[in-house]
Image (tube, rainbow, N blue to C red):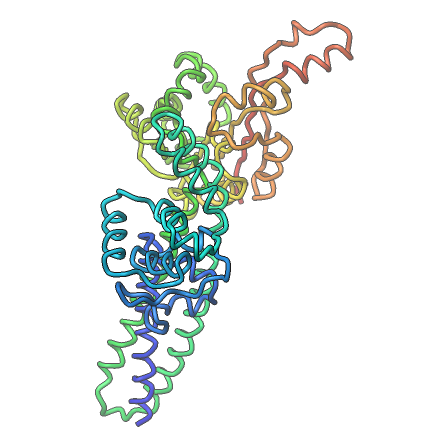
Amino acid sequence: MQGSENESSSNHLLRQVEAHQTALRALADGSFDHSRAVRLGPTEAFHLRSEEKLTQPGTGTVPPLPEYPAVSDLIGLESDTFVEAAYRTLLGRSPDPSGRKYHLQNLEQGARTKVQILSELADSDEGRRFARPIRGLRAHSFIDRISRLPVLGYLAQWSLSFVRLPSTLRALEHRRALLARDVATLRQDLREEQRRLDEARAAIDLRAESSDLEDLANRLENASASHENAYRTLSSQIDQVRGRDPEIPADVLQRIEVHFRGKESGIKRHLETYLEHLPDPERVGNIAVDIGPGRGEWLGIAAAHGFDAVGIDNNPAVVDKAASLGHPIRLGEGIDQLRQMPTASCALISAFHVVEHIPFAHVLELVEEAHRVLTPGGVLILETPNPECLYVGACSFWNDPSHRAPLPPNLLEYLVASAGFRTETLRMNPSMTEADMPEDKDSAVALRWMFGTQDYAVIGTREEK
């Protein structure tokens, strides 16, 4: 009897896990009703489908709305729910069959936007008599009309996308927070269920068949693993949104980089200054990873000095160009590549002009993962524009629209040292050489701040035990 009760409880938990997986898939493909999830706790949000009366086509059921709703409260609803809510809000009644069919067809065919439908209902004779305001409708209607203009509309849409990016990121972060809390709850439930299963096994007669319990435990374990994978996938997608500007085409960024990067011969001469800082591939190992390799100049230099080097870049245009030149390169995120590598499996990790493109939290993770992945004696090279040169910090740094913020040398050196590396900082590419500096010390100091070294690199060596 006790075994049956525990198995029933386990089946209930398994159904709960499957419900979580369904909600995770809905989050990943964008069909999850996030506007409602925000108003509920994490557990209720993931059980909306089974525990609440969700709107079904033609039922006339709408979620609770504020007394004076905003446009955002309505346009986030599904098609049939939206039409029902729009009529009730603006006309005080449910839509008649012909009106419902007309508006649903316009939405499905793209002939009308939700904002246009709200404006039409509000401006109708019946809507004027009912006179219930919707906050933000006039502004959204104006923006909707501007967006349909041939050239100005494109510029308006681009500007709005840029302005709305922070709010989009906050919504994604909220989803991730809900997932993280639910993952923690699920883990606790699984531990409790495992304890009950162990008690059930101890209580069941040894002659009884235990195959059903074993199968159930395996299913629970597989479901938990699937749940974790879905969470990691969504987190990775959020990180990618935070890590680059989705409005800038990849080929445009690649052309800008080529224009300002300089000739390949000059880049190679500059990179060869790092040769004296490289580890011995015969003693430390020859595996090397270059994050953001550009045209692949460093990949060629590393290969010529005994390293088995591979490049990682998230820009398809850059990957295609480097691959066409014969360099080993893969499309992906550099941090993801490091996460997948075993501990102490790499001798050299480099990232030339990468850290200024990524969020500060990702810089921290890159340094920490590099320390884990590098073998004792392995080397990390991080090169970036030097904001100590005022011309760089105020002007040339912003030639690349994908740059986020400059990193001062003292800050980056501290991050690398605090991760456990022995550090050395190199300052390079001065606009004015020391020979060109005046003898007057005060003038020389001012000129160094104005036209000093344009780049610097922090070189971290993992200490050998």
